[in-house]
Amino acid sequence: MKQIIPTFCLAVWMALLISSCQTRQNDQTTSTELKTGTWRGVIKSPGGELPFGLDISKKDDSTYQVYVINSTERLKMDDAILRNDSLHIPMRLFDAEIIAHVGDSVLTGYYTKQSSNRIVKMDFSAQPGVTYRFATTSEAPKTNITGKWDVYFYGDSDTSQAVGVFNQNGAELTGSFLTPTGDYRYLAGSAQGNTFQLSTFDGSHVYLFKGTTADKGNEITGEFWSGDRGYRKWKAIKNEKAALPDANTYTLLKKGYSTIDFTFPDPTGKNISFQDPKYKNKVVIVQILGSWCPNCMDETNFLAPWYKKNKDRGVEIVGLAFEKSNDLKVSGPKIERMKQRFGMEYDVALAGVNDSTASKSLPMLEKIKGYPTTIFIDKKGKVRRIHTGFNGPGTGKYYDEFVEDFTLFTDKLLAE
Image (tube, rainbow, N blue to C red; front, top):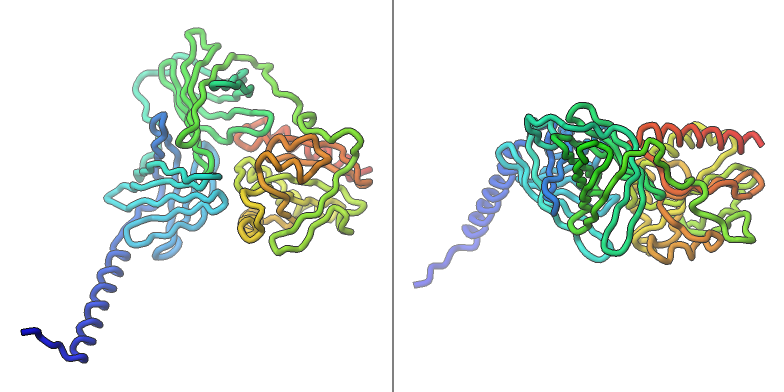
């Protein structure tokens, strides 16, 4: 015989059940413990372990502040959220996120990133209290690669040139690669015997380098893994005079042009034009960038405070953002997040998409060859310099040289 449960009793029973479920869920959330302090994070690359540092501190019951550590860099991530037994570390500027289960003294999960046509997904893990980057053995390095190197990256059909700059102190190794369109940011690792490893992770770049030095220490052969699919071999020859083409001659105006012009919408839909009164009779710096571009973020970290300090001297900066979408509803919020994160007090407009069509947005340029590209315009509206790429703080003295040159040149334009 079918038993009939009175409506009142059923309602009470359902309420108790829901309350019990909520209690268990709340207990699960509050009982999860995440250790704070230094962690050793690892992304599983096709080339092996790709390690980086993490510094995790607690903000409130469920929110944490996370910094990614590469050499001397401390890169602030968006606020991390602890939901039940999983830690979510978003990197919204790069459409990326780490989601990891909080276990007994370990994090295990995935790093994901939305690329142009697919989702990159790579295994992630982390251990607390571990300070080394790559595990080392007792085998001491046989060579020291400190200095400058002519570097050639090569694949199936092309070869590209770079300059390697390294600093080795015993087994510890740091450095970067400089290219005509920017640097490979902060690299950190270690050496043992005649081999070494370097890595970096910044939310967008997932780079792992391995190298083997020749017995005399003046040649290197190596491999380079980028993300979950990128792979190239590389070789290097020691050369303290190694240099790249002048960054101020890489991007040019087309013949017949002496200035630039544009009208593009800002994130609110308001048009920003070079003809606006605020840019008249002023030195104007046009920053071609993208919210997806870590090298652009390095440049913005320099330009944003520089503008705050110097904006009353008769100088303006305007950013022209080339994003993954030309839809302002999609790219506008990303530009706004970038402005807020870096304290950008100057205008930034959506100029186009960062693909082969980008140069059509600024037809007076021969081609946009890299991000960032920085255009210096004098008080008469004439283009005086176009600088391609950016040597960030990870390049050491090359960054210092850029800052010095930038300051001297803008002072000259302001004095005219």
